[in-house]
Length: 216
Length: 216
DNA sequence: TTTTTGAAAGTGGTCTGGCCACTCATATCC
DNA sequence: GGATATGAGTGGCCAGACCACTTTCAAAAA
Picture (cartoon, each protein chain N blue to C red):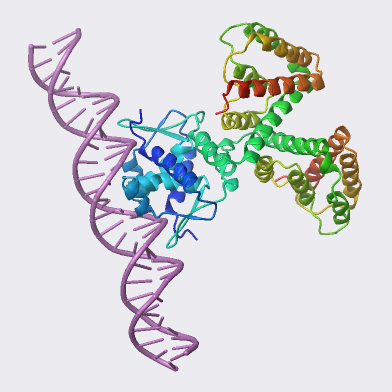
């Protein structure tokens, strides 16, 4: 049964504790010494579990203060895995494709939703486009949110980081037209065009990144 | 700069070591005591790094034998993240939609791949369809595999479990026609029809399950 | 000689206790 | 009242010690 691998039990226990005690992101969890005692394990073993969770971005530790539940946004996991795994071109491509897959699906979902295509959001988005500080990521995230699938949004968020933040940076002048085209197609519920325009922008962006050598 | 978080340095060091020494999946890496000494850190600190990597599935440890590099392609990204991405009772519907999303994307990917549509696989699939023991899941999994996106396959596998194994059971007589239609459309690279037929089958299946009360 | 046995070395798994650096709230001093 | 010192609590790290397990290989038994 549970021979060896005690720290895995702890990982599970901590996760359960977080659920049952209704600990929310930002909240503090008991100290290492306290947890070690209540779970009847040595502190070093407990730390192995905590460090693992930290590397995953599930918790955040601040020396002198304590351990806090992270709002799972900034996953170090991403960096770690990418440096280990992404030597393999296939993996890199898979991540890229899977992310795109979620984005396209989001656009299609929005187009199929009558209500969504009539929202005021589009108007305000067009305005924000012209703002100098408007990030590419803001645009795509907005689409993901509007799709209404929160799970897909979460997965997308991870994949985005995992593929080296493809949407970093602000929207350039050239891109405003592209985005307006996408928005127009969505408003007209023209799923096909919207997707085509989006993919075109995505590919253009990728080439741009390679040209600028931002493909770290 | 690197104040605190020594174990993160170790993670990086281990990665570099693996690269420079050309250690391949399955190979053994130095023992904990040995690594601790060469890296000038305590063994417990080093273990924190190793346990983190192990949780991610990047290394594998066997008591009494040693620590081994595992195949990077088997990283536990999806498994590990699922425990908290899917934690809060995400609406059943989101899971369902997201799974479908991956399936549809797989079909589209296959249709766009000239080589895939000409494979002998389809012929053998048609034969296996008639087998009484052919499971619905076998059919869909085959599609997911053939899409070539391993990450998507992994995500799909999890989502499938979380949505109550929607493809349990063997293929009924009525369904053979549906599946043949899907296969034909794929062979003709008719993405639209293939997806439409697939969605139709999926919806039919869902209703069938509800009728039989298998919606646990 | 061949087979069996068992002791030793090496490994990961775990615990204890300790020290350090840091944060924060409190009490103290000016 | 405001600045300062102090102490409790926290995570970061380490050394040393067992334990359980695997492999190895030489000694003992066949």
